[in-house]
Image (tube, rainbow, N blue to C red; front, side, top):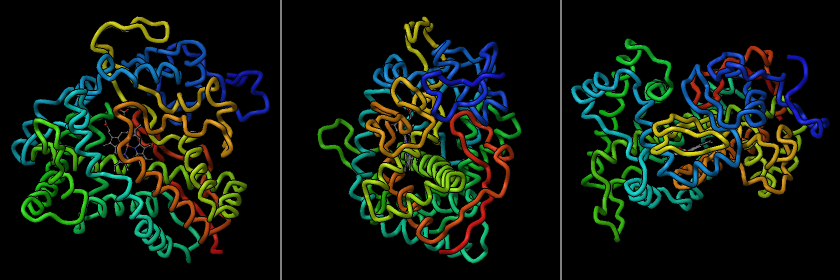
Length: 435
Ligand code: HEM
């Protein structure tokens, strides 16, 4: 563990970290889990499609191989990969609890393969237009401003718990039209849902999580029923009443709406909160970037590129799963049918064959939008306009109001949530002063 995991031609660039000897290295290793970039580098250079024994999954690390997987959603199935992960080991008991106490078991309609997925996606996108997001900018700015008001005078706050998490919960609830929400419950519900693909829960935790998900579904069902007769001006109503004219089944079923509302509430909250935590981390640890943002607050081109580079350098979603539906060759490895894979978007964003000097924050990169922080292909993130807008407005308002942002704990004391799907800080103590 002496030299560093970086090409010699990259000598002047920030390095990925201490060299990792692949051997039996695993993403489950706490050190690698917290600081994975050197592990990604070693895989890309030695075994780009690497079998991780600890996870029992094939890790796809190169940009090019990720593109191959993402371009072929039939060979590399989301549905099969997701089913393999979901409530692993406890699926029958989990289903029974939801059917008894949670209004039913509603499989994730979006975590499916074409052609079923194509219909769902069309109906969802129709409801979730970029236009609607643009109109939300002043509301997002208002939420950011209110949150900053709550801690600006104190000179200190937790960037994750006092800002990132409450901000994203308020925004996604406003989008969906959920006005009577309890933020603590939503945080618990998110954890309960994401635990089902985290591969780390035991039976007792599964039962507790199932109880939380019942509570979540009952809450959503009441809100959906209230909009069936009388639509409101919100995303939930738009999904319930969405129509695709050329389809055999032109509307979403009740089961599909419940599952999509659940997916949006959770996906719209965990990932964006992680991105906002990363934003504050970058601003606190690279003060020259905070100064650059301040100098360019009203320059939309700069702010847009700043957001893209943040997403490339610190991608909130580390990896999501797929399963092969037939034997297939990828990155020099023959994968059997039924191979469970993890698409490492975070490693793709770090691939030096695509992004020169990848560990450097560079808003002037010519190919800045090629990153895969939102995936690619038919499953590319449906909420990306909303996510980008939230990050941009948060960066602008935070830097406009506060300065001298500093981390109040040592870098090595930052703790990450125990999941391979995202790389999310549990908390981020910060200090600052008012401008
Ligand atoms: C910075 C924030 C976000 C990041 C980094 C992110 C990342 C991703 C990624 C990587 C995927 C691809 C999944 C795959 O390849 O299997 C995805 C899909 C998805 N995202 Fe996001 N996301 C973010 C925010 C959001 C928001 C705000 C919403 C909703 C309001 C959302 C809803 C979804 C949904 C429903 C899918 C599934 C799409 C499909 O399979 O067709 N995401 N997201």
